[in-house]
Length: 260
Ligand SMILES: C[S@@+](CC[C@H](N)C(=O)[O-])C[C@H]1O[C@@H](n2cnc3c(N)ncnc32)[C@H](O)[C@@H]1O
Image 1 (tube, rainbow, N blue to C red):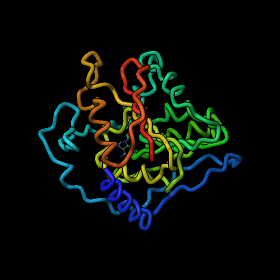
Image 2 (cartoon, rainbow, N blue to C red):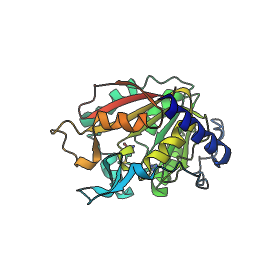
Image 3 (cartoon, protein in one colour):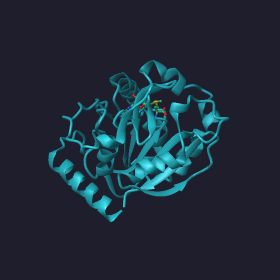
């Protein structure tokens, strides 16, 4: 583990020296609507070809594997209606998830793979003196977030256009990272996670929310679900420490990890 941490530190040091970051501050008093920030130039990544592979694509799968798991296909922006469906709070108890994050008013939170910002706009009022970075790789999603931020005068919401292998967040800029139903779609999960670990402040937390693959009653395509064991394996591989699995949601794991 020490050896692995050493390797991760070395990789991150290389990242810090070379990455171009896009977002360093938020001005809550700025009356202008938040505009999407352009994507950074792609940073060099840690070569880990042995961790990736290919397979015959399963239902909803991409045909690419990471640490034995088939990566899912990305949900297109046409799926916004499903993300914003009125029954979602009751079905998924999204209110309990926001409570479980124990947010402080000054927190800088990154909602990664934010989509239309379903969680971004539920988190923003809890971090009035902080910021919520809503990141996604689809500009169409960020356009929805920007429009809604303007309508709701949510000036602490900052959209960020990420890349498939880099979150677009600045180093040591966030206290909390949230992924809801997004991580399993990342085409380059290792590179994304290394950029996210770098963006976390020491002691920062990651909330990884995924439909429970262990539970056959959760009616979601298999490639869009994850087991706790697989998630822990993948987070551990980038140096994050497992804290707990908050088992309060009806269908999803809420896996909490910590940046040492
Ligand atoms: C199923 S949606 C979930 C949206 C939102 N988290 C929610 O729960 O309402 C997954 C989102 O992850 C985004 N995504 C996929 N790969 C990504 C990556 N590498 N970086 C950032 N976002 C990504 C997709 O574009 C999509 O908007």
